[in-house]
Length: 340
Image (cartoon, rainbow, N blue to C red; front, top):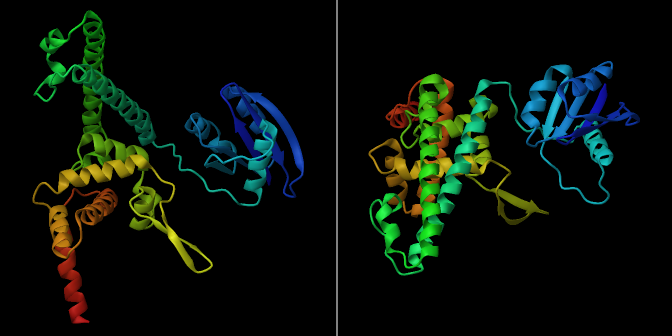
């Protein structure tokens, strides 16, 4: 077996090939072009494993090279200390792969991976729209013009209230940017709604209270498949909904979140706020916890985990959300325990 470490850049990639004993067999710098990369990998004869770090080119490289090697590992970017060159980085990756000290980042050739581009573009657009709106509102607040009114961002008449030509000009440019970004957001919404009809997993998740087309697209884009996690607790950790104990020498030093996807945390937390506004199993769970003495935050965290677990269950079963499923399961379990 040969172990190939790859340091990736947009113009070139540096390769270091190690043998089973750790001896360097080959070093090479190759242009980041499809034919050049394939040519180098295919020039390494015999069984081989390849590793490179997660980055903007990872999915393209994964699809290009996954069938060329016995194992392809895309790992988390590492914190590097001491001397740093492309050769050192590639060599360290190859050696860590050789001794089995790397954890892979999920990649797939599923068409659902393409949703990541769409949801990422939507998030960027929404963040930029929020920043522009804040700047626009500040233009009025700094001259004591009230902004709490319906349709504030759509009312062109508000611009005439500004005192100077400079303020008017800047506010006009921001107003136009808001209109443009809101139009782009509508375009994203059309695509998200189209995906509800196009992809069964997205359609299934929209049946869950609190999860609409946008959140369903975001969940499917990040997870791609529900079978990535053997237990719901693994999803809780990946979605940053739980913290893990930090223990050394038998002493607890607090709790810390594992590495995960903050977008999932945002989705499940916001879905919770929506789901508990109506009479659903999630609202009943929230009310049960509040009645048991739990504070609002603890109750909402429990509901967020419940929604995450429901996502896995609905997706795996291929059946739409059933609001009575939780209560029916609880009654069945109580009967089985009482019978025992």
